[in-house]
Amino acid sequence: MAPNLPPFANTPIDDIPKIVEEVRSTFFTQKTKPIEFRLRQLRKLYWGIVDHEAEIIEACKKDLGKSVYETQLSEIKWVENDIIFVNKNLEKWAKVEKPEDIPLTNYFMRPRIRKDPLGCVLIIGTFNFPINLTFGPLVGAIAGGNTAIVKPSEQAPASAAVMQKILAVSVDPSCYRVINGGIPETQALLAEKWDKIFFTGSANVGKIIAKAAAPTLTPVTLELGGRNPAIVTKKADIHLAARRLLWGKIFNAGQVCISQNYILVDKDVVPTLVAELKSAMADFFPNGAKESPDYGRIASNQQFSRIKKMLDNTSGKIVIGGTMDAEQRFIEPTVIEVSDPSDSLLTEESFGPLIPIMPVENLDEAIRIANSVHATPLGLYPFGSKDEVEKILTEVRSGGASVNDAWTHGVIPTLAFGGVGDSGSGSYRGRASFDCFVHRRSVTTTPRWMEKLLAVRYPPYEGKYEQY
Ligand code: NAD
Image 1 (cartoon, protein in one colour):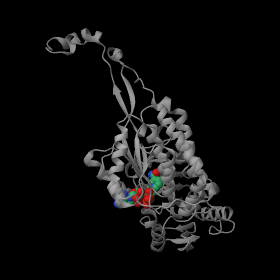
Image 2 (tube, rainbow, N blue to C red):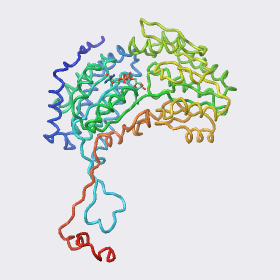
Image 3 (tube, rainbow, N blue to C red):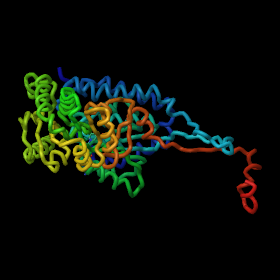
């Protein structure tokens, strides 16, 4: 029997300053600083997730039509494994570090780097991997010794309500809280003072966050959006490219920030790639994607209409798929052959199961188009010979890249994940999650006995430089 889900309710806006004040003042009690406290909270969060697995599965199904398999892989086990990894390494990461190559003159000052918590941090999540992209950064915030407020996406309300319940029953509520709501609640949060804001979402809202953080010089980590190119040359294994890139766009119904937004393909291999994509589609969904229990749905009517509009407005030709069902928020994985690099299917992020293919004359043209669509995409997916791949990696910037694959670099738990330029700044996951939420504080201690040696630094300076 499906579990009952807790109801989603916006946190009353008038309550927000009081909740933030409580969580902020807890930080100054020093409660979150001992490593043992952090480890205990992480373990409690882990068991909170384990205890609510059935509700998470139900919530992700309700919000995104997500299969149990995808929810286990990309939400539950994802965060659980992150916690295990952080738990295993936290003591080591939190240790005071010695800098390299200390000059002899400074050796006795014991130069060192402490990893101090930032303070009270705000984490704003998005809807596509609602648990993973909200609890993931929270793991880093707890590990770093901070207090935190988490604002899940209102576009995945069932998951947001389950996260609120999990935090309320598992971790210390004076340190970590969920505030639920949409734009007004987020604006109310942004009006408060923070020691860091960690934001995942669109570039447009990322700018709003950065602006709100500027007057108080609050540091931000921005995990932003895609328009990621895949490039397939004549020398690529087209069969593999088709299967892997199709997977990249059917997982979570294409609502993956690092999935390829479009594929630039050598014109000579376009027919082979389309045929291979057709055959992969038939393998993955023998009864069609709509009938498959493995294929998800678009998160909201708003997202559905946005993706539909992109498809309605393209000058390209649909060569695979194209069916939709508004009631179910179903969009079939759809391959579109596009000939104009200014087509909105390339220049806008679909964040859905659309796979535009654009034929190119050669690799140089592919690189030129990729660089003109988005100077700094979040992901890059080169398929070709070793030399071609190297040329693509060298000439096209991106937050991360997976060679001969779709977004694998984003699933490796120990590899830092983040964008560059306007796909984001800062990174997290694995050790990077800890680093993201601490201040590396340089400290020295000057012993009394050094005073004689240090006399050289005091005025009068006359003749001292020569002595030195
Ligand atoms: P969004 O920017 O609309 O919303 C993200 C969060 O911001 C939500 O919690 C929302 O409540 C809040 N928000 C929205 N408008 C706001 C406003 N005017 N003022 C203050 N807060 C506001 O993004 P989305 O539609 O939820 O997500 C899609 C985007 O997120 C895509 O561009 C996708 O590529 C990106 N994304 C990036 C990553 C990453 O790790 N880099 C991961 C997932 C999604």
